[in-house]
Image 1 (spheres, rainbow, N blue to C red):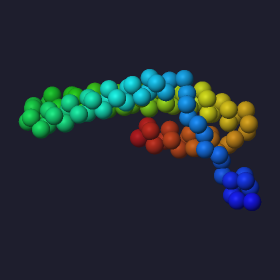
Image 2 (image 1 turned 90 degrees about the horizontal axis):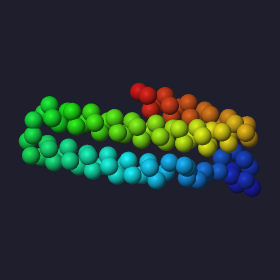
Image 3 (image 1 turned 180 degrees about the vertical axis):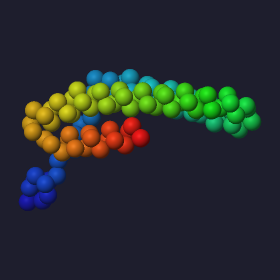
Image 4 (image 1 turned 45 degrees about the horizontal axis):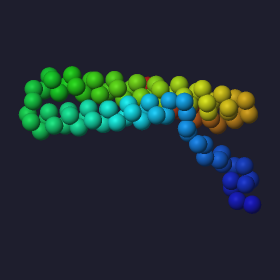
Length: 101
């Protein structure tokens, strides 16, 4: 019996959630925005303008993270709580700690 069969590892989760399409759309927009900011730097645009756009990108990425967190709690954490899977809760706590830094 290998490790997975022995239960020492959790099976990989399919992370298809309610907002997956919206998350992907927001990622596409954020990537496009980053490319635009990169062009601003290449063109020698005003540093203040660039910093404002970087702040907008950071906000967009944070909002994507919030959407993923909400979906994770609504699906994975709820399912883990129902089955007593403490590892999912521990992993969530680590992820939140890293996300809010």
